[in-house]
Amino acid sequence: MASHQSPTRRSGISPRVWLASSLAVSLVAVGVTVQVSQAAPADPSAAPSKFAASTCAEKTYSAMTASQRVGQLFMGSVVPSAPDSKRIALMHQYHVGSVFLAGRSKAGTAATKSLVDGLQAKADSVAGHRVGLLVSTDQEGGQVQVLSGPGFSTIPSALTQGTWTTTKLRGESAVWAKQLKSAGVNLNLAPVADVVPASLGTANPPIGKFNREFGHTAAVVAPHSNAFLAGSLQSGVLATLKHFPGLGYVRGNTDTTAGVVDTVTTSTSPSVAVFKSGIDAGAPFVMISSATYSRIDAKNRAAFSPTVIQTMLRKNMGFKGVVISDDLGNAVAVKAVAPGDRAVKFLSAGGDLVLTVEPNLIPAMTKAVQSRMTQSAAFRTQVSQSVHRVLNAKQKAGLLTCG
Picture 1 (spheres, rainbow, N blue to C red):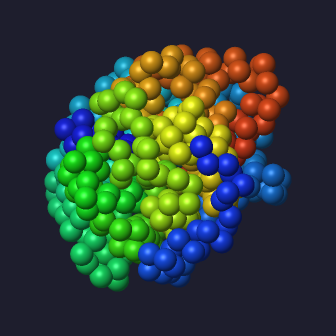
Picture 2 (cartoon, one colour; picture 1 turned 90 degrees about the vertical axis):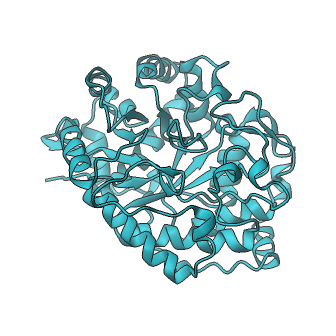
């Protein structure tokens, strides 16, 4: 699934304490060098308030129906090895603007491209122009590689990738991304920017257990995560830093476990600074963890936390891209929350794109979002900003055409 899922199923600090300079200090302290030149320069989501009325994204937004706009806030899954026509039809009915290729497929690039072309052909049209789908998958490597078969490389684990030079990793990542692009995939839910300490290692269920981390220190993870990011962007595939603010210190997998709490990470931890490094290097998407961080916001899961998304990620780190959730469909971490409330809480906290590996929850989620929009002008504004971010990312990915 989209994040820290097992490979068989997919996968109280005051904000004033945080100073921008602390990130730089953290990065220097761990020996991280941010190489902005590694990444493609395009930032796929300038602040919506700054959009010129003439941009394709703005033109598309203005021509959309209310239902089409809300649909852009969702990503539902399709299993490439066994696509479910009923779920696909449901997503089309609700104008879902993004899909996640889930599970495992050994069909190769050509067969995957055929499937994706069929999905794209059914994408919504607005003012006579098709609004293309963001098509994503988990192509990290090792035990988390959704797509394989003819045309796809067998990608080693991130822990192995972390032993390579960043030059080599960027080059290999560009090759892997080119393969994804040839298969119709335009968004990779990778790289994993989580730091798993060596003392925890494989005892960390979501990341370390599967060797999904590039290394055990921020000094190793940041440059390698940035190199993976740069290679992907170089080949025209959007990439996603995950799982903010980090899953390296937890002892439970949010896909399969409720009440996962990180009692270690603070807003100024070196492991969090890895994400700032990736944002400065041009990351267009950031995925939010569903764990709770007791030393950041003990009352809310990160995915439902304005402190995590709006204060840390948006304000302090300056991230202007698309904030995507981890799975809010089947993940045990959110099972106690009604599906509609999951979507509303995530968007209210500052998120943009709701990922659910269970598309059948989308009707309840969209209904809850639409209901909340009638009740709150502030929420309507947030929805508008989120749809703009998604559409701007699509514009940068070549998925919008305007006459």
